[in-house]
Structure formats: structure tokens, C-alpha cells
Image (cartoon, rainbow over the protein chains, first blue to last red):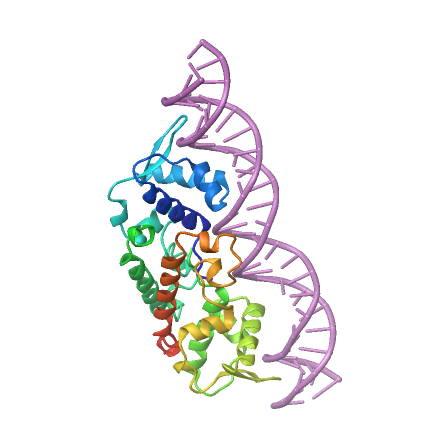
Length: 131
Length: 131
DNA sequence: ATTAATACGACTATAGCAGTCGGATATAAA
DNA sequence: TTTATATCCGACTGCTATAGTCGTATTAAT
């Protein structure tokens, strides 16, 4: 219950590591070996972050990934939702295809809680974790 | 990501319904029919809440469940953890069997976030949802 | 007795997540 | 110009927590 995904964990670990390394390109392999993360999975995650313009990639030998400038300023809500889709502690927060809907007797307070959680992550920046 | 379990949803829906009905015993079937919830699953959840002394049960015809007095005052953190075990957005919040541990470079900030989330649910009482 | 309810353990099913594999492309260095 | 090392990307398999089902026993009102 209320778990983060591994992808998110791996992404944050990688970002923090790259952050420490400054401007040089770091390969997925290096990070995977360092933190005992499945390399393929981490690579895919990094590639997704390339598309999101979170990191920059360089191919070929001595290639790898480098963190984008200013990334640390974005909120965790944006970061998480970019990687994993909308945060919703129940399904109707996301797709609203629940057979209940109006009938549901806990909908409003649950929605409120969901907002609270998004708010928490809004106030945390990626840099708060990776620095 | 960051989902509540169905069990928890069903429990809250049931509690709210029972709350509205006052002192009479309500059968699992009645609630299940009303909210299109799998009856067996709801029944098991209610039975778990009996053990937790959250609700009182009466067997036989006209039996069912009744909400315990004062239940609405307990925190959502306690409620959720009683039903589903510890809240932990990552595994090391719970069992600490991670191969990383000291090596992990995001452990502290992630732990902090976990505390924040537990804090949110600490400040919400069950009655805030069921009343 | 019959009926309608809880009690409870064992079982199966599902789906989202985690991880793997194969092959293509790019590029730096030898 | 060949080789080695990296990203890129889609398809695939595996796993596990959650979700849901079933059977049987027990209880109690009518």
C-alpha cells in the first residue's frame, strides 16, 4: 500500500549519482553496478528521462547520461507524474470509471486526501533528494 | 503508484454506511449490494475489524455489524496500519532487508517523505471520512 | 427445522510492476 | 576501418501483492 515504484527509486538514485559527478557522462552500467540495480531496467528509465529532457545522453564509448541543468528545481509531483502518470490513491482519482461515482459515500474526503499527498510532493523538489 | 488497497476503501465505505445507520446491526450483504462490492471480501474485512474491535458483530438472522463507539476518533494512520500493516513508500521503510542500506544515496530524504505521509494520515481521523 | 447471518481458512485469479532479451544504431578509440 | 562500448527501443517473460471465490462450520431468530 502507498508504494513508490522501483523505476522511481532507480531514477532518483541515478540522478543523485549523476549530480555528484558533475558534467561528465555516466553510463547506465556504472550506476547499475554501483547500486546493484538491474542494468536494462535502469537504462530504460534513463532513456525515458532523456525523452522528458531530464537528462542528456551521449552514445558510443565514454558515452552515458548527464543531468540537465535546472532539473533539481522541478517538483516531485511533476517528476513522479511525468514518469509514472497521475498520482491517485484510488482509481476514481484517475479514470473516473467507477461504477459508484455519485453513489460513493467516501469520494469527497478521499479526493481531499489525494490532494494533500500531491501537495506534499509539490513542496519537495527533485533537488531536495538528489543534493 | 501510491494506491490505497480496495480493502481499505471497502472498510471506509462500510464504516460510513454503518455510521449513518446508528445502532442497528447491518449485514455485509446489505452494504455489498448497496455499493456493488464483492460480498465475501467485504465480509472478511468486517471480520478483521471485529478482531480489531473497530466494529461489533451479531450472528444469526437480523445479525450484522455495528460501528464501535469512539472509533471515529482514531487516526487514519492507525486505522490503515492496523488493517494493512506499516505504511512505507519503499521497502526499506518496512523490513530493512535492502542490499543497499548504507550505500543507498537517497535513503534519508525518502524516509523523510514517508514520515510526511504518515503525518498527513495522522492528522486525519476516521470520522473525517465517515461523517 | 429452517433460514440467514457471521467466522474462517484455503484456494484461485488478475494485473501492475519488475526484469530480461534481441537486435539496431551511434561513435570514440585503436 | 575495424572493434568495442555505449544508447535506443520494442517485445517478451516472470513475479508478487492484491483481489476475489469457495466450502464449511457456527450461531441465533422465527
